[in-house]
Length: 591
Image (tube, rainbow, N blue to C red; front, side, top):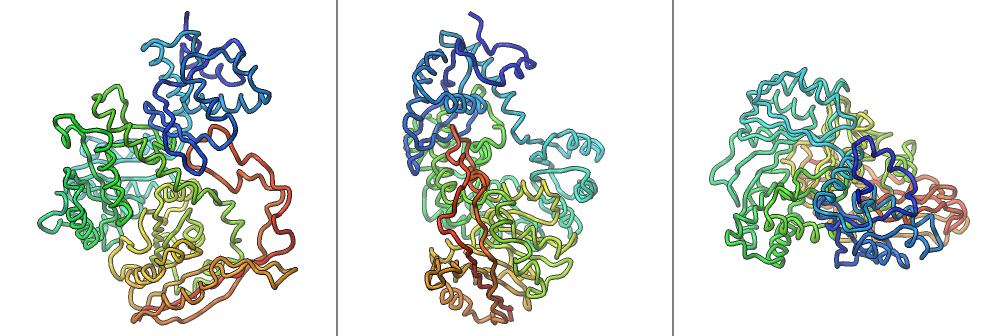
């Protein structure tokens, strides 16, 4: 019998809409239910497309998914088992949209049929995924060629420019930066991968205007024996530099990892890009999943201490979250390499879901703008408190989705720069996307830690941190303030803001307080030999009401959902009545 989804690409549009009762559906055989349960959610992993999916809490939801995994299921029979047909169709559409489920025949698909199903699903998915473009600058190419290729993209792509030596392409990088600044081309993110960092100030300026980071290839693990030519020039000019290293199993050794981190921190590397080839690590191919997990946990330990760490030959977080297509097909890999990649996906997806649980509130700029309205936001409306002017360099610590960076962007102008540091890579990526969509050209978003800012001493005019509760709750506030003081020049200023209370104006005797000791914590953190507090500003706004808003407007997830658990409209406030948020901003100057 001919498979239902077999056909030409033009057949894709006929697949949109409610599936008929006589259709048969089945999960892709590469889909598995992962063991960890994260906050009552269960995770699905698609080993072929290398993407995760969330099954939220709800009676029968997981059973519904697993029922599709054994053999093709007749939809009429399936629907007859449930009263709520609407939610069934929503779940089927969601599974199908992300390639987790195929419309098939009554019998299990053959290898050839499964390949056709996946090709159709991949084409359908590609319409929603960010593309990656790899361009060899050493090959004959003109700026017109680049402009045509980039302009042909429907959405802003990730661009990887490769070359042996940066200095050989000084002119074309400058021209590409001008096109970006003029809005003639758009790039979600640009990486320049090279073997040679040699550059002058003008080339560094082009890289900054391009919004690019530079990846230096073939750096010895755990640290080079001699200084890297051009590295100091790059970092002093605010260019984000990542080094590509190939660790052996010595990465499992705490002392070796410490040496790598000590070196990377001393030269202000922005990130470590690690290549972990399973066949090279275990030539006999005798490693088990536990061995893989030990390796991934070692990388996680580096990430927790350093901030920005990538395994470059495994699916990125953006692939796992379903935002970018995977660059590798399991069909082209050995069984051992596939096992390695599958183990990584099983390990990494729960990590990403745990991060999402902490950051599912306020995930789009419109929501952030409602939480703290622009007209009430202290620093963007009073940049003189930070002595900001056109051309200033600002570090935004714990920058989240970039609200503060976007609001300060017009103050520093085209010649200025705001570097936003955020520990969660998925937040940095979203912030970058929002800035790209809104044509902000002077913002750089980089993963990093508040207690270890990956920037050289005295390179910024100001540093800001706004409303970051976790830093204080974890006791990292003093380390953050020390780092902010380190990265600003003499005479530069730092500012830290936190919400003190939420006041119910009809009952002022019962304020909501997050941390009763926040004022003392902040004051004590500013006790620093090179800092002098020059201002304390208390400010606030009437708190926004959620009544009438859809919950999905406020709660956005990173990983695709089987069904949206927040598809409701707020009917009332938990605490009705007018409320006011009161904030405190401490501003200090470095002596």
